View 1 (cartoon, rainbow, N blue to C red):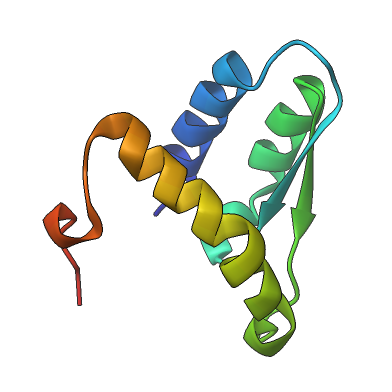
View 2 (view 1 turned 180 degrees about the vertical axis):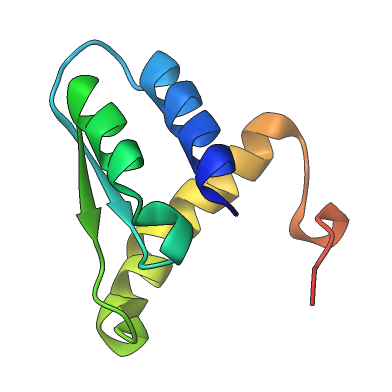
Length: 90
């Protein structure tokens, strides 16, 4: 994902995350997430970006299982898709 695509995601996130602000968005340390323009845009919309520490998978694993796993499962159910129908990009 490049910076332009991430900004487009933030615009979508802004429109769909509700009116209560600020909101927190956890992001990884991919270089496209690190551009100052993106942080400024998010801040102007009341979106607080918090970068996760690189190489912190062992720390974040409980979130993958306990939080994100349930969100992913419910999201796929909402859109009527299953894990088998989602293409895997190697």
